[in-house]
Length: 162
Picture 1 (cartoon, helix red, strand yellow):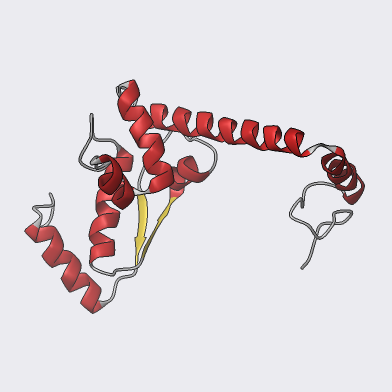
Picture 2 (cartoon, rainbow, N blue to C red):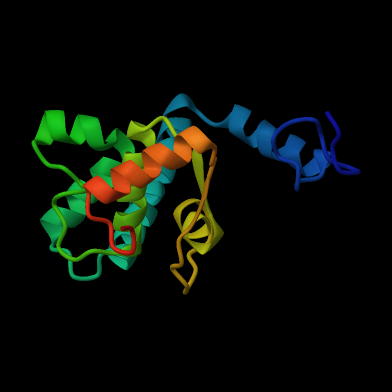
């Protein structure tokens, strides 16, 4: 594995090896309880970030819906339906770009058509939130895929497809 100059071969690529060694030494000096508390605090921070992301995507959602949507991020659609009887795709307050991505993805997945999300929507979901919410979906088109996609779109009355 190639690492930047001065970095170790661990996962902290942007940290010089000497600094990383200090961090690891500090972790080793911590008691098990201190390490547990640090992990719990990091987990809580991740939960707050997930909630903030849901509130950005669903600004009119009530607290109960926000809680369910945060859970859906961790559990996935099938488990949310099985455990909570709530479908994050159907239980919409207002349709957002993310809802469209989910709907498109479900159709493509059901047809076994490979696809990937890109652009600002993907960046907002896994990285830095973006002010634009355009949907960029790359689909593996082949003659067989195209025929199935047109048939699915026509049967579901997708606008623009005749």
